[in-house]
Image 1 (spheres, rainbow, N blue to C red):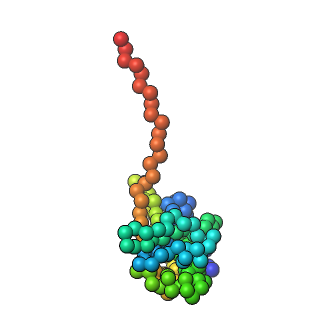
Image 2 (tube, one colour):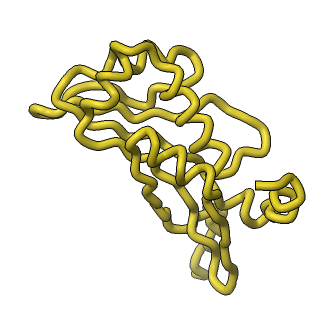
Length: 153
């Protein structure tokens, strides 16, 4: 993609506030901790462990300025492509690998638009990961409760 196109696709403030992050969710028959350890301090472990007979790893990349769904997906794919061969085999053997784009639903009468670049889609396909989308309901802002006046006697 040419730089001019990337500049024209910059996200608005609305988009920036509604894109939350991309999580990498991995499910496998084998322990994923060695794979997560190989990714090092470039990922945040949200949870790694075993549920019944399936091992799971739920990760985020470390913070970056001006993150977008595409830039975060590309960052994960770059990390996967730099894995040593033994750890890459763990990745390849996993039964499910999802790059899950998290979005907060906009408030009523507002909209959200974003796109995943062809480069990010291609990179995800090359490492054998699917791209998923999770939309969370609008986050409620709690308002202080008004105190009721005591009933008149």
